[in-house]
Image (tube, rainbow, N blue to C red; front, top):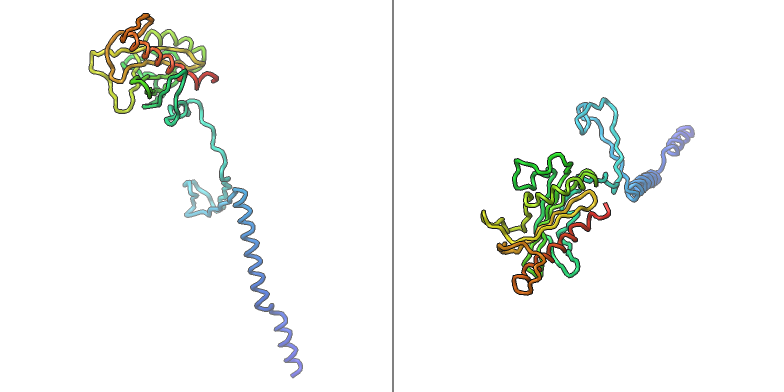
Length: 257
């Protein structure tokens, strides 16, 4: 009788009380969540993927090993190359107000491309062939106080030397390049030559071609230094001023490149 009671007592002593087991479980869970919280606060998550039918998520053989990938939240993306970032929205954002010496305008149209022949009127004959043109941007700037639009075409070249070499060709063939119209406005009827003012400038390894017209695309002589003070002279001067100012605005993003 004494031996049996002693054995029963020892068996009870070897089993931990239920309360102790619950406390231990809670401590282990608290430690686990503490580790997760630290990883989350540091922006690092470790994701383990087990093999599924002998392949990883990418479809390549994985054998029997677990594939572990560390992903850092907020890690900076690889920087874009100049050709990848050569888009209208970067250099001429739609929300920006464009001002220069009393000139105020907004971007009313935009486009871009890598093939410089695509911005030329005759797509079958590239006037820039062999001149290392790397891409183009076209934007339309519309004045807020005058019914004038300016088409800005920016041509990007391999380097400053290539741009300087191409400058005479662009100046001589300025009419060969398309006019970028605001959204909703189209080219005039065939045979109509709108009154316009044109400027071509070299800015680093870029060339800016700026052409200004009236919104109603009225025909007439190109503006010049006529010295006139009549209505016709005022019309020409408004167009010439718009062209000079839009050209200055066009060159600003590329001055220090």
